[in-house]
Amino acid sequence: MSVNILIAIDHRFDRTPDGAVWSWIYDRAFWQRYLEVFDEVQVLARVRDVSKAASIARRSDGDRVSFIPVPFYWGPIQYLRRFFEVRSVVRSAVHPETAVIMRSGQIANCLAKALKQDGHPYGLEIIGDFYDVFAPGANDHPLRPFLRWWYPRQVRKLCKGAAGVAYVTAEALQKRYPSAPGAFATHYSSIELAPEALAATPRMAPGDVRHLLAVGTMDQPYKGHEILFRALAESVHRGRDWSLAIVGDGRVRPVLEQRVRELGLENRVSFLGQLPAGQPVRDCLDRSDLFVLPSLTEGLPRALIEAMARGLPCIATSVGGTPELLPPEDRVPPGDASALALKLEEVATDIPRLNAMSLRNLQKAREYSADILQKRRARFYQYLKGVTQEWQAGRHPPAGRAHV
Picture 1 (cartoon, rainbow, N blue to C red):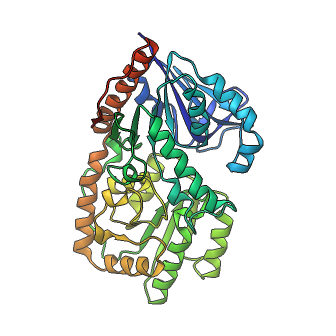
Picture 2: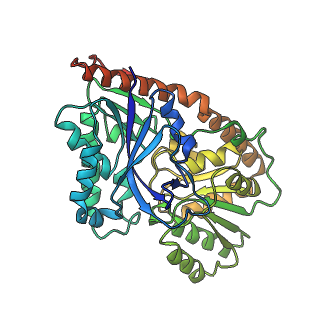
Picture 3: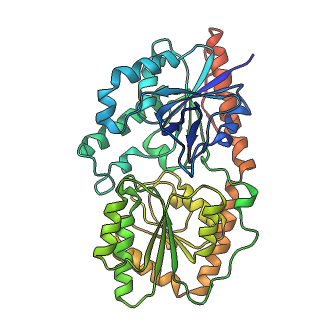
């Protein structure tokens, strides 16, 4: 019996006049993981009409992949203004013969209410932590304290009602958002490292370690760029000769550029903008000496795994699933610019340590190769497909909790 999959996701997509849908993250290849188990993919997401696709965007719809466009909104206030339009589209997207996977967010919250009416089972993929996203200093939304309370509460409700939950972390998110008794629980990263993403050998550190790289969105302050700038300024004041390249873009970029000027770092910091995924990003990684991820919140950071896959020594904050990737000696507390500055100086002058970091990071990144992760995903998707088929036939899902 054929089963299609409806995927509810909070990502914002663009649609050109020819009807094509575009994204710089979720291209056609991304949906293949679902098509290995389900017959067709329908994506329930916000879609914005644009005159042309961004230069870095890639086609997202295609063979057996279609979109159900949710009226476009940005943030909770706009969502409330378009609530009835959004709810109408979400409710009409639900069909009894379709399996459902939701990636936690506002569209998922709305969809869960529609599914609850007739007991339609669903799976949940948790890829981040709203509690940390709305932490002090990580987000500048005027309703930040309320949203920090409200969103985690909604995610816990989604977990309680899900037939199965998949987490991007092995432990961190499970503690805050536990699945219900009897639900299928597993974990896997959203990232799939293709063979070409992995360096053939670890690197040998140069004698002069000075070229830093950071990768992250600038839509909100939670990627910690300002903290990295302060750490850089502090270290430069002590005599270190750093240069920093930043990949990423977003609405707070002008604020960050101004902060760089205020700190006197304009000749040391380069804003490269958003780069196409794949080889352009790998080229930046390969030109760098040290990768820095100063985030205030993370799920399981894709950028960090991609840097590790190139054998690049990495320093990051101890948030989200980062402790599952890097040992304590390669991490610093979030929000502590002085600790970050000292850690960068400590690592940069220890060539044997840098070489050891490269080897260890490359070995760890190999655990995220596509073939390993897809087996775990496929078991989750097969379970959800079976639960949906049994529900369609009027039977109850099998009892007992399963872990992978």
